Amino acid sequence: MSDSIAVVVVSYQSASTLDQCLQRLREARDVTEIRVVDNASDDGSLAIAQRHALADARVRFIANPDNPGFATACNQGAEDSSAAWLAFVNPDLMVETDTLVRLRELGQPLGDCLLGVEQVDENGQADAAVRRRDPDFAAMLRHPGRGSRLAVPADPAQPLQPVQALSGALLLLPRQLFQRLGGWDAGYRLHAEDLDLCRRAREAGATVAIANGLKVLHVRGVSSRSRPFFVEWHKHRGLWRYFRKFEAPRRPLPVRFGVWCAIWAHAVVQVPRLLRRR
Image 1 (cartoon, rainbow, N blue to C red):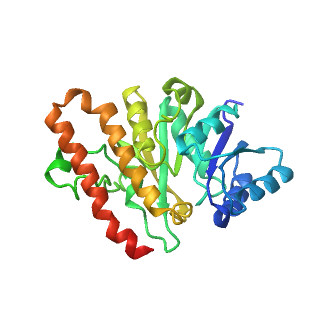
Image 2 (spheres, rainbow, N blue to C red):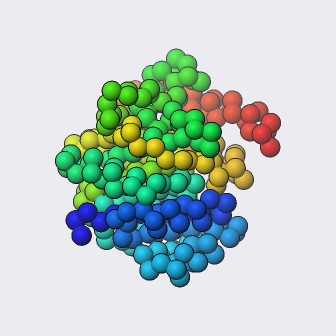
């Protein structure tokens, strides 16, 4: 079917939200395939995926023996499906019955597109990070703390607001575009892979935009709470990979060294906060 949607869910220690996430996806309109890729969880996530697979033939799961990273797992799920549209949905994100269908309807007239939606927490607070700009490495050098902030404000006047990048918690795009881009860059382990995918989509001529009128609940950080230092390390490692891939070739060596210092100085600043949280 030209309008069918395959959903890929990558789980890691996601048992607290995965059951509800999958139930909502099974109730969503025009979802013909659900692929759960589990990255070696030991909290019961895989058992939840198995139960849904037994109850619904659209659900299949891949049990990785280790954790190859988010991007690799997304590619695995996409390769195991065949629907015309691909949706990547975090296991801590709760779609409404018509969320993906309405998003697809917005995307169909655009042709090549990569789309997201508004995300709110349990208190209804909107997540500013769903609308992003490309990292400004010049600003990072001037202000190592502020330069890494990527959020841009919502524009209520635009139902479909073009942006440079979107949050990877929910992304929808045509399979043909995904294949043309070569999928997610598996060189990222965690974080910045969504910035990368959005930039490559834009460079390929696709529209990257957020549907301001569509809203989903995002219970943020479920899988990352148990390993905050691991997450922070890969967040900054991903940002450095992004810089090396898109910006470094046209920057002189002193600038490249300065960006490296700014990225890792920002990482060091996070350590006291993570220690307090623990």
